[in-house]
Image 1 (cartoon, helix red, strand yellow):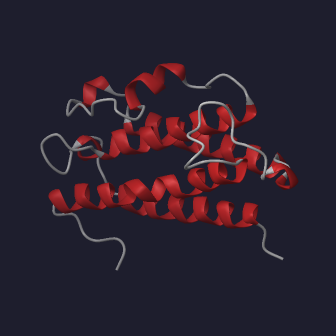
Image 2 (cartoon, one colour):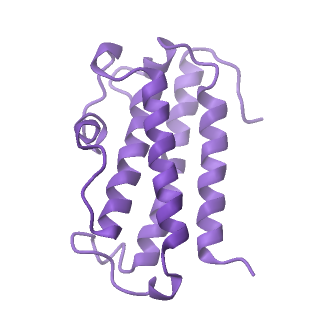
Amino acid sequence: MTTPRDIIISQLASADHVMNKMTADLSESEFFVPAMKGGNHAGWILGHIAVSEDSMVTGLLGKEKRYPKEHELFKGGAPCHPEASKYPSKTKIEELLRNARAHTLEALKQSDESKWDQPSPEGWPKNRFPTLASVWALIGAHPFWHIGQLSMCRHAMNKKRVLE
């Protein structure tokens, strides 16, 4: 029987597949080209997904954020700077995402689904995320909020479509 945990794991694997396809052929400089003036570039998008997962998962576990320095660069609402020098390298950002994702999957696999109906941790808007399950669902869905941005970055650079 497929469980909610299995579905979230599948969502995260699908997101990884798509994000990898969309960024694999980007050079270091292309990784930091936004789709438009004031838009986000692939570096910010992947860094944001990584620190968002870190924040959500550590929040669920009642632990400290694992990447506090990176949170300042990539947290929601943080500006996306067009200068690559303000960010870690493409390799470092991809590593940050891989590490955050591994931590997410480990926490997800160890979580007790029988408790997913319990209220979400303090600080979560209860009207949108009333339960632990709703927070785990957000973790699985969040990367897809940004995949369209990656597609637009590719389009702005006249890169080949990767999802046809």
